[in-house]
Image (tube, rainbow, N blue to C red; front, top):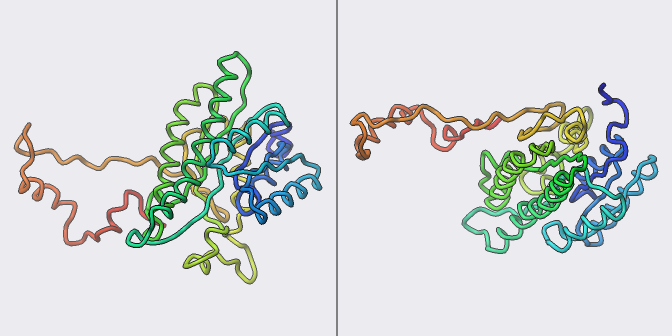
Length: 308
């Protein structure tokens, strides 16, 4: 029987990285409203700690349970400590939501090694170390014959598909998150643990600066399509028992819309008309010309999935 209108995560334990503000905060409040005990992870910097503690207090004031654990989500020792404190405090881990990240935008011409590495570090490695800890914990319980309830939700971006001219670091990291999560989904489903990816469009610290700020700004009145709160219900649903059979999926979510991404597909193969032999350059040119005619627009027509 469905319990979607009740505490369908009652007693479950959820860890959310980057949960002091923005998307992570809304996700923490959502899961707490469903009865989950929430562990809010954020970086150990004054502003982040203040925001995380305020989110904890907001959840407690509403009758929920929450704690804050500080540290760098991409640091192995800090991630291990997050896992240790979670298990010591609540005795289990059921939901791991990797969300933390930041942007340092520049084009490929001007980006430094450090600007590239730091963004890949927080997004991709931050997902990896916490995903590894959660997956190993759940697998260990399953192999010991214990009942396991697990959900893994990763946070990517449409930049992973379409690229982003001013974000070679961010787009690359988000593409890696999708690939890594799809691999984890194939491994973990045998233990009954679904792994999925969300691609939110939301007004966050990352989008409310630079050239995207105007696009994500709240309207003077009416529905704010890019309010991070609009993303939280999907996270709550994917964390729930009702979503047990949804695994290895990627969802774009914003406003009042949720779109399931279709897997990439192959176009028609070009086969050498000369048979089983290596292509000649002239042969390739003649065959591929059928797809790259005068009506073809470079780059835009080259997307495997058209931007919306």
